[in-house]
Structure formats: structure tokens, C-alpha cells
Length: 248
Image (cartoon, rainbow, N blue to C red; front, top):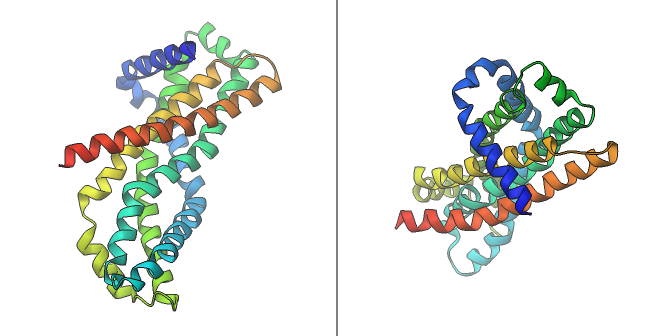
């Protein structure tokens, strides 16, 4: 555990030192950004739409019973943009993109391609790690903004279509606009940026540390995804506590 913590810390430090060189690797950043953004768009649409629908379906009847149906849009909107969408999108990207990063870099480590890069005086952190982390740090917050919009739309459609709730789309969106502000969206984006750094760092570190053959690559992918999700959930608590304190 301490070896992993030390390796992650060193990788973060070396990546931060290499940030001024990011424009030299702009092509690789764009390739990773495309994979993160366009490659995940369909899954993000499906997941966020049904998250908003399920949240409205669970909360709506309870609020209607208590005469609070007019506040449903604000509650669904806050729940999505401040907590549910950032965490679930981070978990989705950890499973889809983080596993691919770990597998790709892990296979390069197993088949000595990383050693070949060092032989050619190419720093693996600059060439492999930096573009992936930068693309994640930019792409994941943009995906979360898009997912917020789709989730709000899903909640509005479910509220208007369900007879037990019977809250019109106009009423839902009006309360959403009145309740959810820019600071609420930024609350989720701050956490998303930290989650992106965790996913990129953990996945690349596990890939670089891969040993063995195909079985080693499989273990690397499993550890990368599991460790990323665990750290996301732990970090979510502490970031939420910190952001709530700063908002007071």
C-alpha cells in the first residue's frame, strides 16, 4: 500500500513538472480527448437520462403527498449536478477509459515498449501519462456538464408523463432555474476535476507497474478500476465536506 502511495505521489509530481510540455504532445492529447468525449457520449446520454428519470420517479410521489410538488425540479436538479452525475460519470469513465489506459500502458510495459522509449531518450511520463491526464482533466468536466443537462431533461419528462407526479415540464424547469445556480454546477465540476486526476494517475501508475504476461495485464486493469472507484468515493466525501464549509 505504501509503495503504491509513493508511486502515485511521484507520478503526480513528475506530471506536474511536465505540464509546460503539454503543447508538444497536442496531437496525443486530442486523440485521448476524442476517445473520452465522443467515444463516451452515447453511454453518458443513456446513463444520465435514466438517472434523472429514476430520481424524479423516486422523489416525486413523496413530495406530491406532502404538497411540495412545485419544488421537485429544484431538488432533482441539485441532486444531479452536485452529487449523482459527477460521481457516476467518474465511475463510468474509470470503468471505460481508466481500464483502457491501464491495459494499453500495461501491455507496453510487459512487451518492453516502455524500455524502448527510454532507450530512445523519450520520457514515458511525458509521452504516455501527461496527454492522458490532461485529456481526462478537460474532458470529464465537459461530459458532466452535458450529463447534467440530459439528466434534467430526463427528470422533467418523467415528471410530466407520470400520473402519480403530474408536474408539468414548465413547472419543473421553472423551479429548476430558480433553485439551481452556477455555484451548484461548479460544486460538481470541482469534484469532477479531482476525480479525473485520480482516474488518470491511478490508471497510468498501475499500467507502468505491470509485470508478468497477459495475467499481469488483467490484474493491472482490475486494480486500476477498483482503486479508482474506491478513491473516487472516499475523495467525494472529503471534497463535499470541504466545499460545503467554504460555501457557508
